[in-house]
Image (cartoon, rainbow, N blue to C red; front, side, top):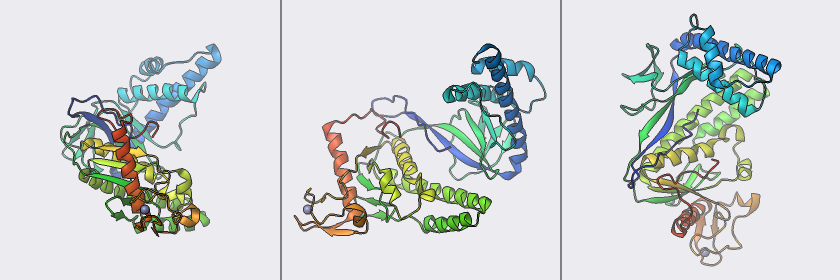
Length: 377
Ligand SMILES: [Zn+2]
């Protein structure tokens, strides 16, 4: 799971507070056997819920709540189930929630082919000496981003991906900083380079984007599903890693970050195929948002309408501006009005920053302490 669903409880006046982040770690393969065993127990509980709910529906048109199911499960699986009782409870709650959301009388059965999932409750996983402890057993992970010392670990889960690898998703409460940098920046999520900053800098998308895209196309043409899946997973991991580093750097340097709302049609016209980049912009924006809060800063989103066409020097819409699909190839243009030579992407970033500052001055709705992503992101 992505580090999403952040919450920012009301902090004090100077915005010191806490927020919840989910850290994701790859669990070392030697633990797969133990996790697979518990995942089978999870499937058993899930299917028991499904069977019970199915029967309740067919016989009495009844809907069972997660706690109804949990009581039944606890009664019949006292012993012999290789699962923490609270994990079983979370499965019941999740089952009832999913059934309600999907508005179905019962759900699909979990089988050996279902991706493994082992939920755990708040306080049941501990972080000790660089490893995680669950039910008295130590789980070692690839610790690329250690969680801060003394963090409180919430209810999370072990999850398996389509390649059979296990990951640990741990929600952690993080204290947010109170003092942010006073530097501001506008960011254009461009196409040629990864992003252009209003400072004139650009951050190029690394070569692996293109390379994995080509490799993926080859594998797909040859109908090598397994290989395609591996390329996909690898590209996704490398992309995330890259975005994490860039967003950390940006949020440390800049206390206010303004980004454009990238339209899907613009992404579709990208020279990168969608499969590799797809969620890239959304991920980057989300990372910028929560890392800004963590560093005491904030991120704003503004409409990027016309930001690539308006001259950032004089504010006019010059006839020479880049327009349409042909305009995408026009990297540099001169403003007919003021004569400024403008880099298309940097020009857009400057306009985005200006728009962001305008909304701040105009007093656009900004929730105190959490001026992050717009609703629905
Ligand atoms: Zn101009």
